Amino acid sequence: MTIKKLLKKILLVLTLLLIGFIAFLLYQTKDDINADLTNIEAKLNRYYNPKRMGGFAVSVFNADSIIYSKGFGYSNKEDKKPYTTNTQQYIASISKTVIGIALMKAEELKLLTIDDPINKHLPFKIYNPHFPKDEITIKQLATHTSSLDYNELVVESLYIAESEKNKSLDSFMKAYFQQGEYGALKFTKFRPGSDWNYSNIGASLAAYIVEIVSGTSFADFTQAHIFDPLELNDTYWTASESDALLHTNYYESVGDSIANVQTSGVILYPSRDMITNIADLTKYCQAIISKNNNVLNSNSFNKLLSPQLNGSVTNLEDDNNGVFFMIDRNNYGITYQLTGMSGGDNCITTMMWFDPKTELGYIFLGNTGASTLNRSNHNWVYNALVSLGYNYTFDNATVTEKAKLKWHNLYNRIRALF
Image (cartoon, rainbow, N blue to C red; front, side, top):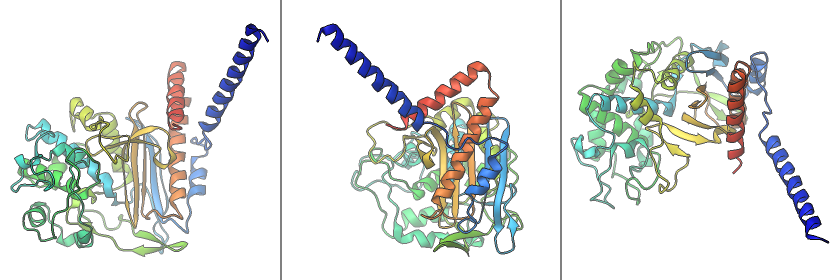
């Protein structure tokens, strides 16, 4: 066989392999749901499982308009009371994004910088005993790399009746860190800044620092600088302030069904306790996407949402972290790299994510905790929202915009395979 014929055969084999690889990528990256405004409600009703889910609301939106929003199921299953876009509920850890915005507002007001050591502002000192010379910074609290560990023995004692919740975090923080009333402080054996370890206590400690530097409670600070400017009139830190008639019941999985359960706030409230509805939370996320200057200036928003961690951080579950915002792909099977936050416990499931490039946002608020039996239902619902957002934007785009969007979609889907 001549060299020329051999080269032709090699070229043919390489061409066939390339075609096969492209076909594989196209198959792997296709949209199996193909949601649009004519079929989205039917699809979501199909993914809703009344035996395993109480009720939920969804929203798909861009920076300045709502593409789709609706409630499904029941806020009170026993009385057949529907879950609507006005239904209020706890949103769990999505609340931490408010701490991030509050930190950036405090930085704008020159009350702190996120690179400050926490001991610069606290009335007591906190050091990891394994690294007593290393300062813990506010940014490390905001990226869950502070080395603060969570004392599981006190978790249950942190849940309290709403009537017992203090507006200020001062008494709890002093009891926890200074007086040791909740037991010995726990730290990881990693140097501050080097390891990712999700910490509710670290998040609320950051909120406490906002209280100290501002001279006001975190609740009042966020009301004045976030909730009021955005006219979030159905958003609260305590159940006593919210509308009891609109507040949902909560449900947890019990076997192949769900049961009504009671939930309440926690002493270190801003790490999980914001109460809102899908309408207000959509408005809130739109303000973040559009970088609404009634809340923060553009530089503060850029810092809030940009990657804050380098590649040397171990145990990092996400692609990266902003300031109390996660940056990740493959959440719920979504191949895009989205920015946002999720939350949940035994009776709450929440998701708030957006794509900074397309400025498309997706929210799910549910009054039922995730379980092995209903997690796939939640994932299908969320994938349908992303499918709807993409197809709606594509159908209403110019030729140039369609090309950019198609490439963005293909790039992210292919990237997720590797």
